Length: 220
Image 1 (cartoon, one colour):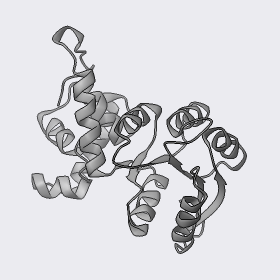
Image 2 (cartoon, helix red, strand yellow; image 1 turned 45 degrees about the vertical axis):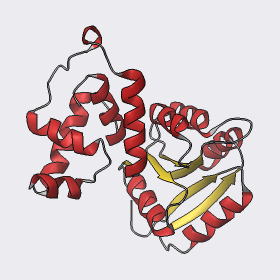
Image 3 (tube, one colour; image 1 turned 90 degrees about the vertical axis):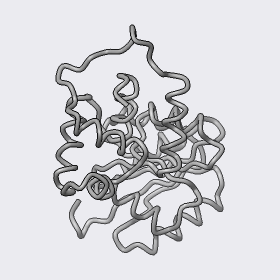
């Protein structure tokens, strides 16, 4: 994204005070611009269609239409849409469904302004992220309800290498490329290349979906 073009953000939350607080935090960032707000999922879908923001910050629990279904419909209409779901510690079930809905990021509402801004920049640039504590709970829930039996295990057209599986295991618990590189004594660029290769083999669009797909295939 060009340096002189601000990241355009749509805020979606049914609590006005929450929206105002997030807007104040993001307005402090010179490279960001809040272009719209919505108080429920249906309004979010309409606002997205009108504004086409770079990133949507989406609450989960809302009247009319929850954040998961709103995310699903937005991504279905625009597969390039970038949605960060804002969650609390007691929203595990919703977050798990948000993964399937196509969200690009998952942050706790308790995150600092700096952490939220970094998340917006990462997702706007085409990356994906999941807050580590959220990642652990989502993966644990996925393992609980969706662990494949041997007869359900599929195979990939091109299998993952041993090193790719090592990296995927660390990616699945929310580690960033730099952290994975330090853990495995690799260059960060090398890890990035491995991650790109894995996504192609798994036929997924982001890191979170890669981890979930690998769990479905019983790779991790």
